[in-house]
Length: 332
Figure 1: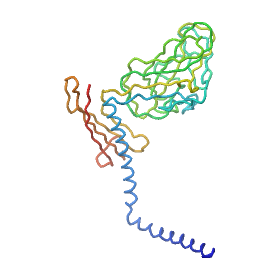
Figure 2 (figure 1 turned 90 degrees about the horizontal axis):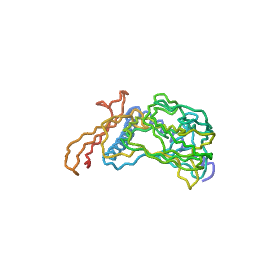
Figure 3 (figure 1 turned 90 degrees about the vertical axis):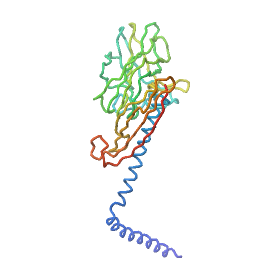
Figure 4 (figure 1 turned 180 degrees about the horizontal axis):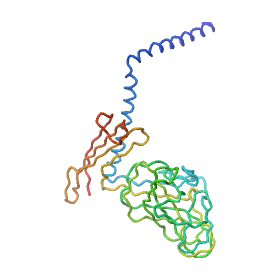
């Protein structure tokens, strides 16, 4: 076949496709639900996935097999200037040895200075109660879950410049916030304090575990950790550095939430993560129980995911929805 004939054949093919497409359009007009059914099927599959994820979460909470979330402090800008990310399960860049925050301090006993990500701060402030300052580490995603009553653990790496025996400690306040662009609507969850350390320690790590706190429920909200330096005894001028990333020889700064225990969650509802107009509703009920040691109880779980067409935060009759049920035995 000569060159001009190959070109002519291609034009004929394109023309045929165009004519076929013209013919299909009226057919879709005659059967307008054809594409609609496919869209409904796709959304139905997404609803199923959302319901299954919630059911898995509930079963994990009942059996106490879950683990706490571990958030690593990163040197990455969050939603507001002067704030960095705390990434869930993603360790900081160990290839670097980054000094992140310096506070040149002259502190009286009982004085607080806030660590502001990426900024040298030496201005005393007052932590809380109940109101964040707008500087800290935010979870890298919205959270829809309940952290049961239990202990949280913290590990903060530090370095300091000084020769005297003056002592200080970290003071951390944890909040839940509806958005990362402002602190409007923030709610304080708890505060905690590290063991004392001396300024003369050139580089070390403060590690501690809180008393039992919670439970805390986050409904499509962020965690915010605000970190302060508190002078326990009066000190002269020192430079204290909170280090969030480091070499491969150092464990990055981090905090870990309480782990799901054997106490079951309560019934509830929430929006679906990443799926518009989706609503999750779950119920938890005890079907049978025994006071005999080692026997425990049998619970029924039900999860409904629906398309909340009228945006009334309910799964109404007639709305597209899927439902999953399960029974689980919980032993003390």
